[in-house]
Length: 223
Ligand SMILES: [Zn+2]
Image (cartoon, rainbow, N blue to C red; front, side, top):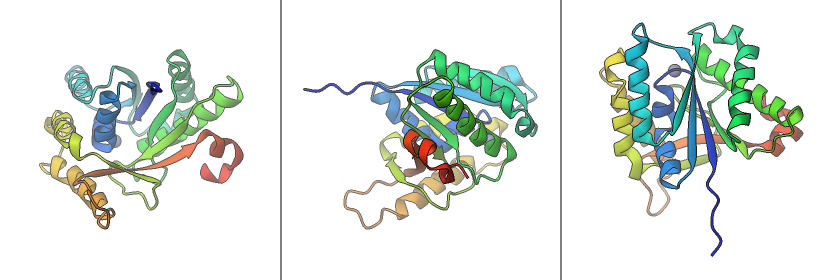
C-alpha cells in the first residue's frame, strides 16, 4: 500500500484568534491526518500579551498546531511593514520545509488581514524565485468577510466541537457574545452551498486554493 506522506502546513494568522476562527476545522483535520502544522501570528492583539499568548497556545493544542511563532508587529501598521514580515515568514518557511500555506483571503475587510495575504504571496514568490523552493499551494481562508469565489469546501462537521473549543478560548478577549454563533453561522452558510449533495455535512470551511504553477504562470491570480 502506498503510504501518504505527511504534509508540512503553515498557517498565517494576523491576530491571535484568526487561525481558529477561519480555518480551525481544517487545521484539526490536518492534525488527525498526521500533518505537521505551524502557525505564525503577525500582530500583538491584546494589552495583556502574556495572557493572550497563553490563550493562543492553549487554543493551538486543541487544534493540533505543533508550534507557533509570534512576530509581534503593531496592529494596523502591518501594511507598512510588509518587507520585514516577508523576510521573517520566508525564514520560518525555509527552516521548516513548508508545503501548504494558509492565509486570509485578499478581499478581507481588515487591513491586517489584507497585509497578511500580501506577505503570504510575496514571501512565496521570493521562496520560489530566489530560494528555488517547490511548494504545493497557497490556500486563502475566510475570517469575517465571506469570499466571493472559492475553489473548495471542506466538510468540518467532524471537527466542529474542537473548533468551537479552540475559539471559545478567545471569548474573554472578544467584544461580542456571539463569537461562536457568528463563526459557526458562516460554516453553516457554506453547508447550504452543498445542499444538493448526498451525505452532506452540517459545517464547511471555504478556501480558494492557488497552486505554485498558477502563482508562477498566471500573475492574474495574485491581483
Ligand atoms: Zn483578525
